[in-house]
Length: 94
Image (cartoon, rainbow, N blue to C red; front, side, top):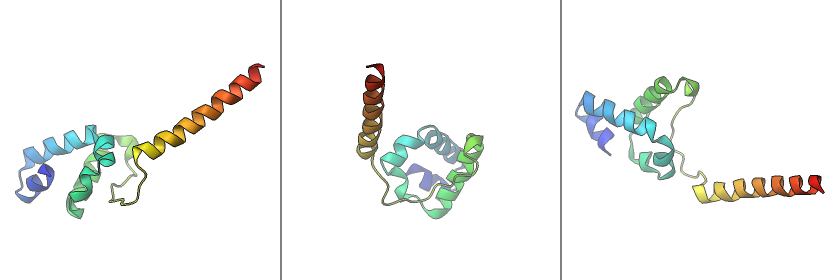
């Protein structure tokens, strides 16, 4: 990943640009497991940057998570929740 090379060669402006891009696209990159290739030091830098970029996330730490659910699993769960809510609403209207 480009961020890893920027950190390795101390290309600070490139590193900052990569961190900004990743911060803005965090959900998609995590889902695609694109950050799995980053070293622990770079993940630490990314965590610090992300917490500064989004103050509400100041207690979160980005760590490698090998067994997380993929988006299709989450969509099924969300669909079940919404379906149950619709059924409950329909029954209460009757």
